[in-house]
Image (cartoon, rainbow, N blue to C red):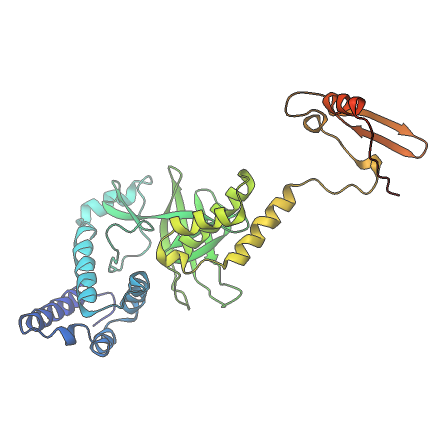
Length: 327
């Protein structure tokens, strides 16, 4: 199979589909589920398709992939590739388009195989009226540090620089894995349209976007709710996809994250009485009664007296008091 060749991919699919029909007719269910036969067929595909197939296998977990899954996946590729194929234009139309600066032209003239899966939420194709082709709409996902990451085919990019409507991105594994992949997007109506993207030297993370969203959701609930850590963790893990929940940090790590966020929201511990700041909320009880009766500065330091009128009445009517003093 030649790389980036639509005809070879379609021929490969038709041969595989015909062979599978013969196996089905003869009742060869063992060969249809053979992992060895599947591996032999995968080795005949291009590196680009093998990489995409690896993402599909990851999404199928925990179920093992079979030849029928590969056949259905290739069928989707062929159908989608026919739908999003660029519109051919004649020489006069191309010349007129070049004279119009408002039209956006692609920098790459080589035809590429469009690989996608219908119904997947991480891929959005948009039709460009100006040039008559389908455009790849990228998604921005929040990072663990609060910044935005660009996701393309399961890979993540961080922003390098911005010039006008163009954004330049570099792979998040640039330092850890020495990956030099880069991407360029342009902003149209608040959406990032992919203009170009280089190949990576590592495998993608198909579930990485879901993992980031789940961890960010844990942090948001830790900031905005008073739920127990176990309730927050259970809520986020049960609502996530099975492939995402398997890649989430451990429950202990998420619990420590929740405690760290809530510690950061608390006021700093005062070292002296002079640093104690009693807010208006703490001065009164839940029934709008006075709680802070006395706040006075004395030679020995500061005197804070917290008591309610109801407690004073009970003390006045008590036959004896029990007191404890600490130094």
